[in-house]
Image (spheres, rainbow, N blue to C red):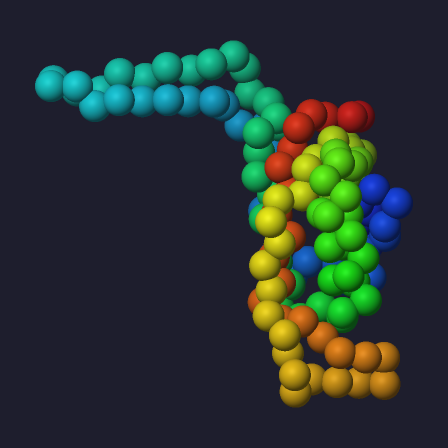
Length: 125
């Protein structure tokens, strides 16, 4: 697996946790007096799928680069480099993370417990 690409940014480190990106059905349901009613809307799709990317630690450089994509507020292309050859138009949702004041190296400071969720808008290829 190569390094993932989001917009024009190639990840310094891939996330430690990433769900399998697969098509999902849009299903709604409601309990009734005697059972349950289900509704299936359309066919399976990537659209609307939330991809939760998580890192235990991330350099501030990578965090700042990815945050800049979020702050731009525009859809970008995401290439997960998962061997399937598919890319997706995504919106980055609100990132989360904490300062990690005790972990430094010669390359700089780190953030911990970082999450950069992506919402898939559509499949590109």
